Image (tube, rainbow, N blue to C red):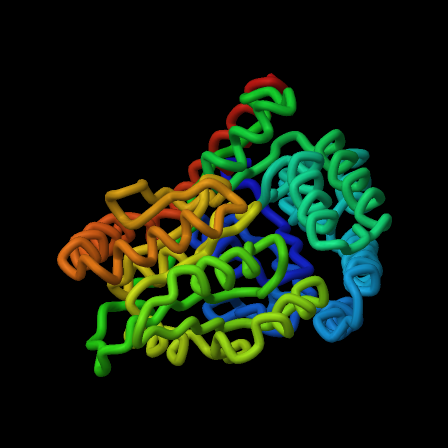
Length: 384
């Protein structure tokens, strides 16, 4: 068989849609199984789409959890149900490609049938990631949910049963290599953005506006950005968050009440408008496998402030600033430099814009198709 049939399974939004399109364009897609409200399926034939509505409802409700523990338990329930239900569609597959934490039962069933398995991982190696986050919880006087230990164990079990692990950045790849995962088991791709949705626009006021988009939480370094912005104390400035907060960040948001503006999740067209009215994009994450919003902001003409634990491929003092994690003073200094040096800010913005243009979803889809060809050819050679 020259073209393997691929079943893709995702219980979250993530980059599931571009992944499914990649398989479709290569004439590989057998089924796209998803369980998230908000996941796009446009461009994918209806007969190839499986929407698992009960897991989707559970995962949607999880965003309203009142504590980190309830949030983790809700996702464990929703993802686990999605996993078990997904195993019903394995008869369509030569390759089963699933997102981490959402496919252990189905992957084990796939392996028993001789189906190739690929686990999609979009963050650092689980033990490293959770050590970073557990430290953050301790630093802020919060109890790290014990359920996360079970989630880590599930992640690692999925790696054991998978033939390959697809990682989305050099940062994620390095963390896996450091953990002893063989390089030949890793498939490296680079995520992208849609250049028809994110383009440059005109800023219409003189406010020095710092924008951060995505979930607000300890892992994203929301609290360090708030403190860095406070310490910078820039006149005629504004800090704008666009995204939904998680329970672990709520005490911090209350502490800094009145120092920032907040918009909950918005459509991409509206998000682009916020980028156009901003001066710099900031995402000082503790752990960020890639950060697609960084590409989108750069494509709208913004310099970026990120950390060394962010996977998006941007360079320090070329596209903005790449800073150590947990360093509000470094954030304050970077913001001050960009404010006081508009020419430098424009230079970084122009260079970030040009750099972002190479990382489109079209490029990503090509990389995925090449990965499928590589693993399929290797499997056929080993079977010969």
